[in-house]
Image (cartoon, rainbow, N blue to C red; front, side, top):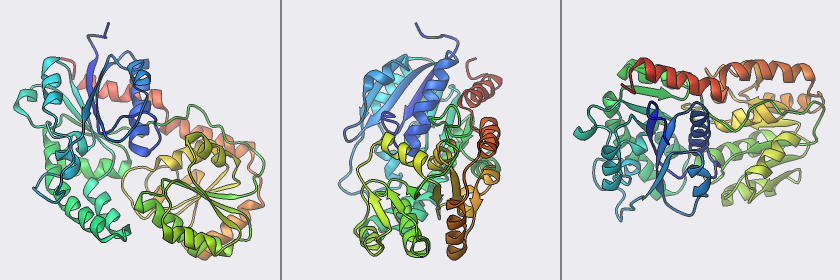
Length: 381
């Protein structure tokens, strides 16, 4: 039986199993943490492509409903963001109306029904994973394919115009301090709820590894751009093994890696394979040129890896700066990595990580905060 005092609709933009990329990682481990506090979640998820063991989600939720995401022949048509308009299921609205409970929308992606009159009296939460129009503008800047580049430009503008729908939410649950400030200034009613993730304790090993690692989904232009930057500007100065781990690298990245015998690509890895490399590396290097949201790969590297080198955009206002080595200049970053390759990771380093990460990125603590804020707003009546 569901917990009638804490019944919650949650609309996910994708099936959050397996938890193998940023957004669905946050959703999956949020579901797990909410269940531990007795919240009975009715999960609504959009499916496209082949994903997920639904029985896993049914074990975490009171109900699970799946909806087909629509595809449009012309993704440029209309004023509604494509990521939102393609998730306009009438069946979803019927299911939301059928059971009286607060509604938790994951990203602007799932907000098609946010301002529907039938939900006017419901308490509504929107989890913002990024400042989406900034995110898409950065995707445009990183993309080389003309069609995709133009799509990202159009989508960024549509998202910018659509974003004020957040005024209809009773609470915005922002994923980073910078995003919290942005949404709070524009719309008020914003709370910082840090990213949920798969780590319960710091599992980093003391001692030394033998290689440098960059990891990320290389099908995402932002990550491919970061990998290219590291190979062409940083790794070429380092005379130790360097690994780029991620699926679907671009031809340009493959060509760049091929120029340097000490750099190699690791493709077609599952989540466990990536986590194994994170733990084995001596230095995890992460850089981004996209400043919104929080990078879950950074959290994984800090929980599971040894030394972590980042650029300033990656850690800006995350509170994680004290446990990262931050450098923006390529030559200086290369020199820093070379120095850390000779510097064993110590038990003292692990203790420092444990103290800071437990304060900020504790799933149970953050789920409790989310529930507390909702209860204070009388989400459940």
